[in-house]
Length: 386
Image (tube, rainbow, N blue to C red; front, side, top):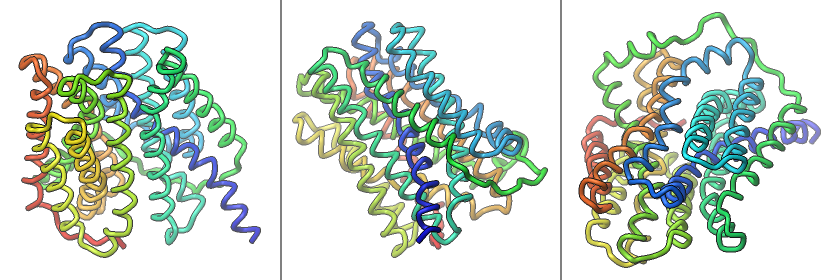
C-alpha cells in the first residue's frame, strides 16, 4: 500500500505536466482571434503556427543531449518555465510582435517537454505499467487541448476578453512547476553516448524511414490545420460568429481524445496496419465531406471523423519507424522533429485560402495530406503493440 501511495505521489505532478503539454494546442483558437483582432490575411495568421512548431525541427535532438547532461526532471522543469513565460506574455503585452514571441516560447517549451516528459515517467513506473501510464498522460494532455477553445469562448462571452485563457493556464503551469520541483524522483544514470543531428539525419537515407518521417509531417499538418481551419469553415459556410465557431476546435479534440482512448484497446486486438487503414479512411471521409458540407451539423460530423481518424496515426507510424533500427534514440529524435509539419502545412493552407478567396483552398491542402497517408498504407507493417 505504501509503495502504491509513493508511486501515486510522484505520478500526480508528472500527469499535471502532461496537462500543460496540451496548452500548445491553444494556438488554433488563438490564431483565429489574432487574425480578427489585427485584420490579418489567412496566410499571415496561419504563419503564427510556424512560431510554435518550427522549434521541433531545431530543438528536438539538442533537448535529448541536454537531458543527458542535467537530467530529465530538470529538463521538464525548464520546459514548464518556458511555457509559463509564453503564457504570460499575451496578457501582459498584446500585439503582433508579442504574440510571435509568445508562440515561439510555447513551441520551445513544448519541444523540451515532448522529449523529456515521457522518459521521466520511466523512472517512476515499471516497464510493464509504462504503456498504460503513457496513455493516461496523452489522455490528460488531450483534455487541455479540448478545453482551451471552450475557456476562450466563455471568457469573451462573459468578460469580453478571450485572452483570460492565458493567465489561467499560466497559473496552472506555475502550480505544475512548484509541484514537480518539490517531488523527489530518482533518475537512472545515463551513459556517455548521446544522439546528434548527423546520426538522426543519416537515418533519412533509408527510403522507408524518409516516407514515415513525411507521414509524421502530414499527420501533424492535418492536426494543426484542422485546429485552425475548422472554425473558419463554420464562419464562412454558415455565417457563425467566431465566439461560437471556436467550439469546432473543441469538437475536433473531443473526438481525437475519444479515438486515442479507444485506440489503446483496439491496437491490442488488431494489427497496426489494419488500424492505420481505418484511420486513413475516416480522415478521407471527413475531409472529402468538407467539399459539400454547408450546414453546421454536416461540418461538425466531418470534423469528428477527422478527429477520430487522426488520433492514432502518430503512434502507428512511430512504432513502425522504431522497428526499423536498433538506433532507437536517434529514430525517436527524428520522428519528433517531424512535428515541425505543424509549421509547414498551415502556412500552405493560408496561402491557398487567400489565393482562392475561400477556405476550400485549405481543404485542398488537407486533401493532399490525407492522399499521402493513403499512399503510406502500403508501407505500414503490422507491428504489434506488446
